[in-house]
Image (cartoon, rainbow, N blue to C red; front, side, top):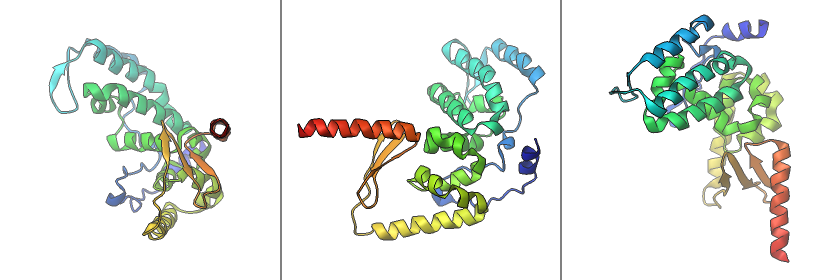
Length: 244
């Protein structure tokens, strides 16, 4: 509990948010998931939702609130409560959960309305989904660094590898210092890439496979080391079959 209080006391630092990077403004801390109703009010809110016959969708249109869309909406609201309540302890769970809800409710144009009912600002939701999409199963391991620093690091195409190799240094840096460091790395990468060969990679789901800069090994991002070994083993097996 002392750790949580210390995070809340930190002043909000907006200097790391730049329009050119098109990143959602990182919340000061996961506790900025504001508007979460009290536990004793949860069932009351669920009953209110079930009683609704219409709802205003993401475009401000009054639409019927029934059928599959209503069931997904209410079920996600009820099932998501403990996930949202425990957000400080699990960036991974919240990012994955919000991504699932977005995928299911976006076709019905009800995702932003669901966020409103859940008490989650749109920018905050985007922040957690983005962190989950960029770091995948490695997110729980890197979570102690904080959502703000992870989002800054996520600007690098090889963010998982970078954080893995520089975790202690990142922890010692302020968000401002890390942002400047990442900016220098990106600028250096752009200059190095001019006139040269463009980096190549393959994306399979949330996993990105690419060669290292010296071309001597494959780098797999967005998954655990055990999964990386499994994927590399499968690739080697396929290559050996081709040679035969």
